[in-house]
Image 1 (cartoon, rainbow, N blue to C red):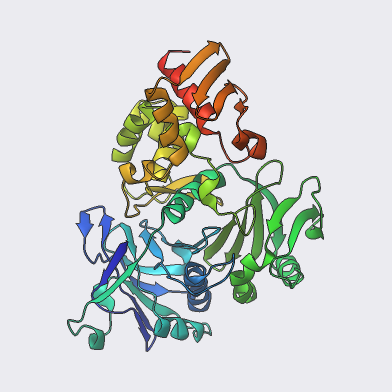
Image 2 (cartoon, rainbow, N blue to C red):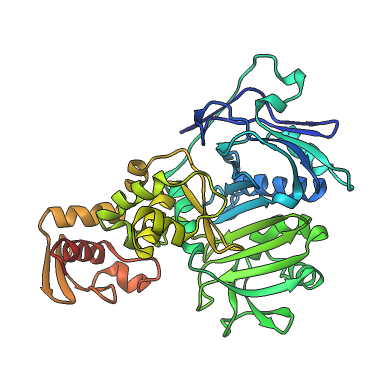
Length: 437
C-alpha cells in the first residue's frame, strides 16, 4: 500500500492553482510536504489540459476497463522545469508532462520529487481553464488557499501492485532504446491523430510518407506499431495547442512506442506497451543489466552524484565516478528500477527523480532474476563450453546458448527473447561472469 498525506486538497480558484504535496525526497532531504515552486504558468490553457491528461492516465485502465484505484501523479522539480508523471492502472501506458522554462516564470525553492493531490473538484476546475491569461501555480502547501488550511489532513491509501511498480521501472529502460521515427508539424499531427480508427482496440502501423504518416493494417518497413489506438485518447484535448508530433520506437518498429506532442513551452509524452493486454512489467528489459553483482555497487556510486538534474550526461557521470560509460549506463538501469531516474526522449537523456520504493523492494519484483540467482545458488547450472551451459530444473535439463540468449525452455520458445532473457539464460550468464568468462 502507498499512503499519501496532504496538508489539504489541491485547489484552483481565482487564477491560483495550489498543488498539495505529499512526502518526498528533495535536495535538502526528505520532507513531509515539500515546497518546490511558486510563480506563473505563462501558458495556462495547455498546462491545465496537460496536467489533466496526466491525471486521466493515472485513472485509466485501458485493458478491460473497470473502476479501480487511482495513483496521484508524481511531480519533479528539476530547477528549470516541472515534470508530471503517471502510469495507468493496467500497467500499459506511461504519461509525462514536461513544463519547461519558457512556460514558467517564478521562484524555485527546492528540487526534488513528490506526489501531488489531484481530486475531482480540481479536475473539473482544470477542464474550465482557457484563454491566454497566465495562471499562478504553487507546488507546495504554502500555496493552498486559506480556506483549505483548516488543520484537516487529506489522506489516501492505494495499492501499488508489484506489476505496476515493475512497469514504471521497465518503461524508462525500454524508452532509452527508442529512436525518432517520424515528426509531423502541427496541422499534419492533428490530421493524423483525428484520422485514427474510432475503434479503441484497433491495431495499426504508422508509416512515414513524406511529411505525413499513413496507416497500415500490417507491419511495414520504417513503420511504428500502435496497438490500441484508444490509448492515445488523452492527446485529443491537447490538439488545439499542438505544434508538432514526434513518434519514437525501436529500430524494427515492432513492440512498444512513444508519442510526444510539442505544446507551447511544454511536451506531453505517452509510452505504450506492445499490446493493450500486455503491460510493461513483463518486458524483461532491465534484467540483463541487473544480473551482475557489481552494478549495485556502481549504482550506489552514481546515485551519490545525482542532484535532481533535469538531464544526466553519461560522459560527465563517467568522469565524476571513474567508471566506463558502459558501467554508468548499467548503473542508470539499476537506478531506474529503483525509481530514481527517468528518460526524456526529446533530449535523449536520463533525468533524476525519486519514487517511493527502495532497491531491495524492486529487486524482489523481478522474479526471473530472483529465480536465476536461486538456480546458481543451488548448483543447478553447469557451463559446458565457452558459449553454452546446462541448467537442471524440475522440468528437465535446459540447454542454454549464452551469446544469443537461447534456451530449450517453453518461455524461450514462446517469446524468442522478445521479453528479455529467461531465468535459465540469466542463471548461466551469472555463473559465467562469476567464473571470469
